[in-house]
Every structure is written in structure tokens, then in C-alpha cells.
Image (tube, rainbow, N blue to C red; front, side, top):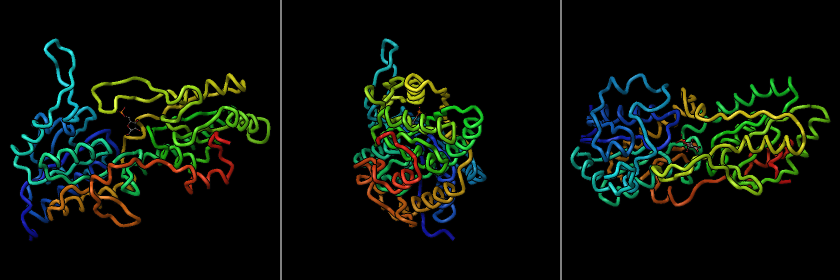
Length: 367
Ligand code: F6P
């Protein structure tokens, strides 16, 4: 028997995708349909779908059998910020406009009682602003980067770390055969959680993250030491946002259509080139890229995503708007979206994982 009526609930996935999005969609939709008799509206391609009125009712069949699927059945976009909306100007060139009124108009036109927005810090920022225009929003945090302050973990992170760790394991055997320095570049724009966790789990010799400034001397010392004593290879796990001495972070290109225009990439190549120049050791680079974001979520992420989705739907039913679901310890609970977006969660240089890695001999290039 349905608990009570929820009416119409919208759901969108915004920003970069990650494993576990479909598990959230399934959890929100099934909870809404089974427990509240609600109509669930799937909004296409994140906030783009809200601005352009592209949405459709989701059936039980559409949200069934997707818990193990990567990506998002709704599509997503990181170019759909209603307050920074790329559109074609009269001369055919892209112009950025404020389309927030369109977004709120479509929210009303589709008679949504609540909107569940699944995304990272960008999505939570937009959700907070939409709430200011009268939308009843509940947030669900996702990002492989795990850089949202209000939650201990975002789903997607565990899957990304699993993939990066497996890649490091594979690099170990070939590095050892050829006595090479292998550099693996993983994602992590501002926060080095993926590099830290995968580097620790994969036994990397050097981990470079944005939060710990590194120097070339300790890195070269470490790889030379290893090449002359004992193991004749090294594995370096570097976050894409790690800042190189003299040049800082390496930006691949700028895309003005995005709120955060910077597209990072290339630090791995830079680190490898510098090591070869300074030590004459042979280096190779692997950029893991979007492999970290694709494919099936781990069981941990499926469970976390399901718990998040169920709670998000319940919060919407109880009219607890302006909230985001969060993991605190082992409990999933609501927090205010405005608190969730106040600060990014960066790796403290004295974090237990950093200390543990240093204790087993891993260098962060700082000493
Ligand atoms: O925020 C998640 C993330 O995977 C970052 O680590 C990375 O910099 C970015 O997305 C890449 O985004 P895109 O796929 O749009 O290039």
C-alpha cells in the first residue's frame, strides 16, 4: 500500500558521469513509485533538459535491471548551467546567457513537486540557486573525485579507485620486466583522493597530489635510489591537478561553455619528461582518463547509491527541501545543500592515508 501521495518528482544527473548514477535513478524512482504512488519524470542531459524542456515519464521497466550499469540512462552534461548557458548568437558564435528563468518555468510547466539533482559541486551549486527561485530540490552527491565536504564519501569514487588500482597492478609487472619508471596519471582536479587511495592500494613508490607541493629533487632521488638498489623500477601515481614546480597545474584546454572552463591533462607526460631529462632513466606514461568513469559500479558504490537514492526520495516526500543526502560514518543522513557547497574537501597533508603511505616508504615528492 502506498504510504501517501508524492505527486510528481523529477530527477536529473548533472556534470561528469560516474558509476552508480543508474543505481540512484533506480532507487529514487522505485521508492517514489512503490511507496508513494508518484509519477517520476526523468530530465534529459542534466540541467540542459530542464532549460530546454526535454523530459519524459519513467516507467518501472525503464528503471529495472540498471543497478549494475555504468553511465546514466538520463544522459548528463557539464555545459548546462542555467546561469551560464551556452547558446548560439546572431552571428552563429556561442554566447553565454542566463537561462535560469527558463529552467524554473519548465519546472513549473511539468508540475514538479520536487526535483532530485544528482551531481557534484557544480550541480549542488546550481541546485542551491534553483531553490532560491522556488524549486523544491534534494541533492545527491556524486563524483569520482570525492571532493564534496559534507559527505564522507561520494559514490563513484570507490569504482574509480578500483580501476586505478588495477591499472597500477598491471603496470607493476611491465615496469619490473623493463626496469622502467612508469607514470600513471589519474583524475582529480583539485583533490588528490583518487591518486592517494589508488597509489596506496597499488603500492606506488611516489604519489603526487594537488594538495602537497612537490619538488623534482626528492622525486629523482627516489627513482635513482630504486634503480640502483634492489627494485629497478618505479611507479608514480599522479593526480591530473598536481602542480609542477615552476609551471603549476597543466591545462590541456579551456572550454568557455563550462562553468569551470579548465580541462586538465598532461601532468603525467611532464613528470615523465622531466625525470628522463634529470636522471636519464627510461620512462613511460599511462593516462587512465575516462576509463575511471566508465563501466559497472563496485558493490560498495551500488549500495551507497541505493541508500542515497532511497533517502533522497523520502526527504522529497517529507518536503525536506534544500537538503543533500550525505554519508556520515556508516549512516546516510540529510545535510543542508548550502553547507555542502561551502568548501571543497581536499586531502589534508597529514591525513592518515598520507601518513600510512609515507610510513611504508612512499614519497610525495615533498621531502
Ligand atoms: O569531476 C570529475 C572529473 O572526472 C575530474 O576528475 C576531471 O577533471 C573531469 O571530471 C573531466 O571532465 P570531462 O570528462 O568533462 O573532461
